Length: 302
Ligand code: CP
Ligand code: NVA
View (cartoon, rainbow, N blue to C red):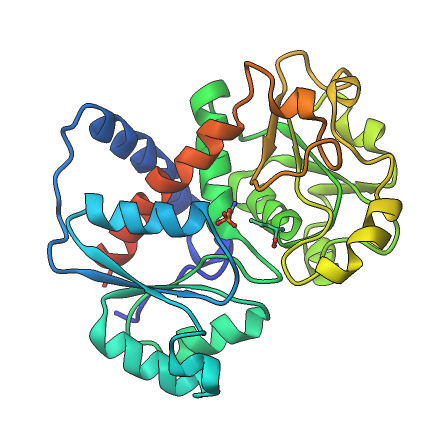
């Protein structure tokens, strides 16, 4: 059987994704009850990080420990990757020594090349184009709080970035409606929009995107690598803040999500983020449980 990778949500079938969310919820319960087993002793996860991270690094490293294995943090500052050793060679070598690899990098093509030359499963831990692991956690969080996301209405407000692209893939795989509101010039990937015409609605108006939504999602206006555009982006995105006023157009029980890190009173009001009933902290925690289910799936399908 050829090696399975998780570079986007389209790498798993709809059924596999639904099963994975169920398993994540199960693993979470077992973990809380201190009943989980450690099925992968001696298995090693390589973690290649070309961008910063809090949640992703900790959730993968802790997750691997829970599963009985271990993880190695590989920064370009300390590896030959950072000195120009080709991705192809790095992938060949690293994958001969570890059992599974996660990569956080810039261009999506880089992780595709890495996966092509890797003998072991490669997980996308964020590229400029996609952040599929975050979507596993988001869907898990929705399911835990509101039940199945199938047929629900989701609103994305803000930048058409890696998270937004992943929401388009999620709309396809989990079968929900997606309304996207973003300013001109900040749309998600065009090919994805074209492939999902019937499923997504594009608007410039946050209120019309959010109307009757079951879930409202946003993300930073300036992603990693766009630090120099920060001020220009703040101007372009004014009017796209998610706050209680905007949420009042959604369903009364609508959830708000943000992958974090968040910038208070920019893309989200401090009041909404710090509300007592915010699920963003569950969403962050679920990175741990969802990725444990993903690692288990990929290691067992080898
Ligand atoms: N949401 C997320 O991926 O966070 P980190 O950048 O901290 O890993
Ligand atoms: N869109 C953000 C997500 C951070 C987790 C970024 O790429 O920086």
